[in-house]
Image (cartoon, rainbow, N blue to C red; front, side, top):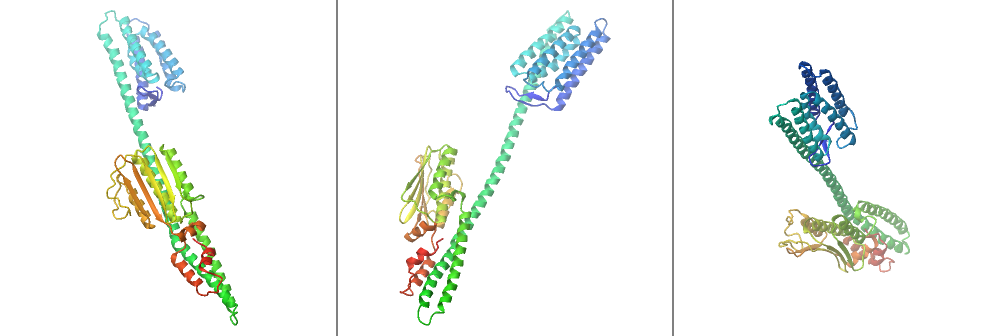
Length: 460
């Protein structure tokens, strides 16, 4: 018997266990041997003819399991069944013992043919078996019809039940495979998220410590070197020129290390911010959300775009990502809007949707007094509030059931910070600037003032 079992009511098939196939083969062989043995044991008849036709039936049946072309739904399967049934009808005409082979043919018909065609041919095969009874038994009784039709009903029930079990097993197998794949993807996503978080933390630490310190050293050395060169021109102070050269060497070394620190910060920055501005990253985020979540997300920019400190840009991008993720998962919104507003003293980001909203009682403007899970049981809002608070910003959530949700985050940007950010994307430390300014006021005749030091000194 071929190795596939047709699933009930579908075009697909499921594997038939080898033990069932072996049992069917043995059943056909045993019934053929029984028919031949009873033909030789009976008085009269044509035992030789029964033996020849039985051998023909056995050979034709053996072709099915051995021929690769005989598979469910194929033309070869239909042709093979037609030849097999014709040979069986001849054997049935010769001996009534061939009637019992109809039970094996029921399984073959239901397996190799479509469900409807198989049912029709099973009924016709049962009718042929009953007719064989009537042909060999002159005194026909209704009991003779019960056996073939009962066997047909049992075969149909067995095949249908096996098909249902196979379909359920296949669904469970597909579900398990999907769960395993999802778990693997989740593990990869968590690993990548951990790597990105660590990269971001390192970039922030380098920026806030090493880069700021080198920037301060560079500014102080620059101012000191210029003062020394001015003083070396005074009578009797020519030795200060050598000191000025050493200070210049120290300043060059600090500048080189500062450049290397900036390179590390840029390399560790989030991939979304690499190779582009915050505006471009937000535009890509809105376009990607529109494409993947089928949620129209519009981006608006108000004010003149400027280069902000890297931690602020990262925080704005992460807040936008978290807010849009909450919108796509829970808001059931029809559209959303992301607005970046740049002003003289602050930068703000607003994410507004027209979704179902939620009860926002207890969410504070500063966002740190009551850290608790969000409406979905997660900590998305808490994470956004904490991120804003770390950089001195604030996060506000406004939402009402059925009235949509608005998430707004704001960060202060001073004039000095903005000017420095325009040049390099970050700000020097306050203490460094003050010390450099103080050094610039030490000698009124110096060529280096506070503005000059801030302009020429590298900023991080």
